[in-house]
Image 1 (cartoon, rainbow, N blue to C red):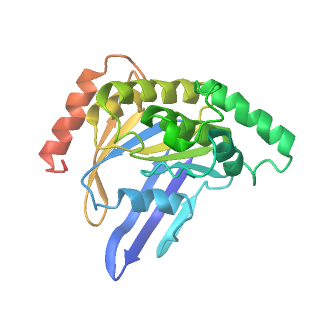
Image 2 (image 1 turned 135 degrees about the vertical axis):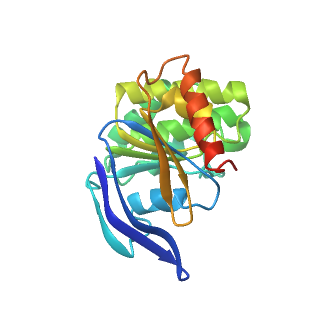
Amino acid sequence: MIEFENVSFLYDNEIIIKNFSQIFDKNKIHCILGPSGCGKTTLLNLIADLIKPTLGIIHGITDGVSYAFQDECIIPQVTCLSNLNFALTSAYPKRSARIAICHEFLNAVGLSNEYKKYPHEMSGGMRQRLTLARCFAYPSNILLMDEPFKALDIMLKLEILDLFISLWQKDQRTVVFITHDPDEAARCADIAYVCNGVPFNITDEINISSPRSQDNSKYSKLIYEALVRHKTMS
């Protein structure tokens, strides 16, 4: 569980988040939708401890965080395997154990035959699979995702989203997932939050009664309507 207790964050004297209190439930997927610049990424960076609250407290961040950024953050000069190996160095000091874990997760995302490839030799879908492998191979209870699939075409996005869901179902973590896509949120989330700002403010909370269902079009519609109602489409 992640709990924000009266959290505020100021940047260059602008109030990005003000007196924000919210609980993100343990081992559930929470999608956040809203316009660019309203504080969504700031929220993730506060959870990741990349920035500190100006005021208030965030509870529940005790066992490490995995983070899928908008940018793939893949090292171009080294192979697929070496990218994953580097990301796990601090978590698994023993190299033999670390390499075994790397191969386990590369296999889990369908890259077992691609481990020697360099990023420029990999498709966009392969690189996203590597990103997912990195997130789930790293031992943490919290997974943050900042529009990691936005650059993918629709069919590839659906494929990678289904892979994410499959990995999460085997290793359920508390997920906070930023997206601009109501269909993406309806497909994977337990709860979708529509927000606006600045300051960051949740205007709608949509509980999805059948999370991870193949057909959640009614929830896509509810999310879309909430975005339009508050004019928070971007």
